[in-house]
Length: 168
Image 1: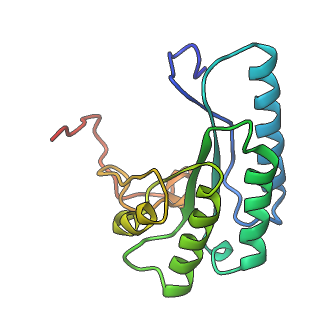
Image 2: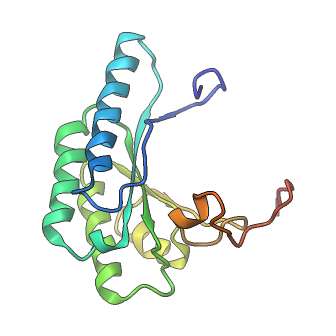
């Protein structure tokens, strides 16, 4: 669907995975592998990005950070343009030091091999840019931190209910 919509880049399918020991983390890697095979077989000449969407508890655990780096950078860096990273419930204004340092460490490691895009992360994104992230995002509609709860049916949310877009 991304191709028929005229996308200039592709994002491999993904699911939110609270932790790397969750089955969905492995499924995401399988989806990435399958996407790579598909675009190679179809000779699609568009950049491919992976999406890493994990929970906040991942950040302060160095072995987990190393595993993420290994899986995305060692296994796929020659096949993907970069990684788009979202950390569930990570608000740059409210997160504690251990989580922010873990996020900074994750970005610093991955950016040494491939491009990193962080979204959304509020003002801490500026620090991540200094460490090598290529961009970060925030949103008027969903706020400055991503939350799986807001994406679930009936999860509420703090966004607008209308379909208008503000362009400054």
